Image (cartoon, rainbow over all chains, first blue to last red; front, side, top):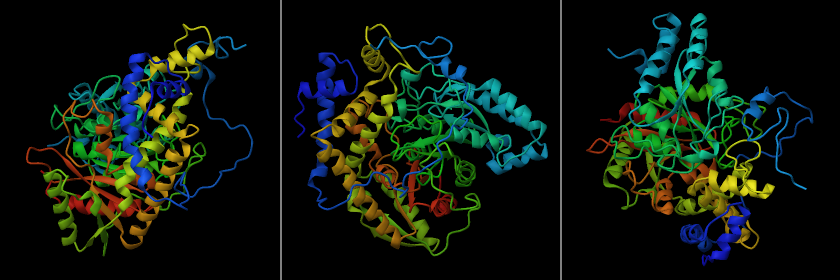
Amino acid sequence: MTNLSDDDVRYVAGLSKFNLSDDDISKFKQELAAILEYVDQLQDIDTDGVEPTAQVTGLVNQMRVDEIKDYGVERADLLENAPEDDGESLKVPKVL
Amino acid sequence: MSHVLDTPISDIVSAVKSGEITATELVREALERARHDKNHSLLELIEERAIEQAKEIDKKPEGKLAGVPFIAKDNFLTFGSKTTAASHMLGNFKAPFQSTAVERLEAEGAICIAKANLDAFAHGSSTENSDFGPTTNPHDETRVPGGSSGGSAASVALNIAPFALGTDTGGSIRLPASFTGTVGFKPTYGLVSRYGVVAMASSTDVIGPIARSVEDAALVFDVLAGNDWRDSTMIERDQTSYASLSKPKQLKIGVISEFMTDSLDSEVSRSTKEAIELLKQTGAEVEEVHIPAVEHSLACYYIIVPAEISSNLARFDGIRYGFSERSGESLDDVYKNSRTNGFGPEAKRRIMIGNYVLSSGYYDAYYKKAMQVRTLLVDQFNKAFEKYDVLVSPVAPTPAFKLGENNQDPLQMYLADIMTVGVSLVGAPAVSVPVRPTASGLPIGLQIIGAQRSDKIVLEVARTVEENVENG
């Protein structure tokens, strides 16, 4: 299962939104394969009929009233971190 | 005579309230020490705001932590200051609001004086993976302080401040505490609000204190724990006070036998056994306990956690905040160029592993399988807790390793967490408390683990160890 190909790594880099050079691909291929080979030990464990665990405190959905709550965060402080803005909103490259 | 800053937190608070010392003097002293941070434990000082807050406290010294300076790991948002998570991705990020943990501490009079170094995005076990250079171990500059809260632990070991905030996803509080001779406490999952903390893996991320004593850690934890409407994953507090520790009676302790093997460093083995013997002498009943699934906990962790990381780090897209590269033509180019150049190799590895194990065709074999193994871990730990009040093990198989020793091989670095990740996956509380150091003076920590919501017992047992162990 851990026979990763260059194309596998390119595919997963694409899902991750990374531009990787061919050198990067071959380096990550080795590292990722080693990690996947290590985690493959789980295949030997019998988990037939075992329910998966996603969270551990038994909480179920936390419902709340659908209303606007004040988080006390200022627009100006948020925009200060924006790569590009027009003083009111974030600017992004043209989508359409 | 020692400085007030070096005394237990309760004494510092008394000294501030009685007027023996002012909060301003304490903050100035802590900042002065921070300027002589020989191990690069800190990334940024918060001078102006800290002095202003101290002056306010001096007008009316109130609160459980009145005038006590502290340090926050740089993945806690500290309003108005830089919060980088030690990554170039957030190199210029200025926190637009306050994390709840810092807010709660400030409400009790504590003062944040600096931000501590960490492995970028808390991905690492040595603090070598900081984009701003590694932190070294105050006990031996050629060695790592552990990670990812290595800066927090080192700053406390250096006595810059009495306590620091850390985060623990798979051992990131306990490991550095063990390597630096400090007390590191990871509470039960969900007791401390994570609002305003840079997320790593949401099903195991926990916030906790690193301090110089169990009593100090308990006092800080008592202030941290409590509901916050802005974090919907929280559980209710189960104690009025986590700070009033009693002496535990008729303890039943299980020693996790899977972690007491021949591959353990001989001095770690000796110090662990010695601490267990001391617990016996205080009247505890001690037995070996088998938790077979812990043998696979690291493999389980390195599927589940990267999966959650790939999701949590998807928000770094170069649009709203963080590193952004806008040279490309399309929106997709902005995403790709920003993420490719903003994230370091370890974040990239973890994101790609996460996206791989979640992708169609591999989900069942990896992610679902790991979630099933997680169930086995939970069941086996729970079974052990039916019989034992706490479980003990070393925190790590070795004392602090050398800088550069493990950072060329990602898997080798992951193995440093082999004894801590299982506890994270079951959401249990655990502490690292110093036991007898190596002959050459390197600290060693004992891990004490309790069932969920037995935080207080865990701290009480830790205090018993602290009181009885020959430390130094």
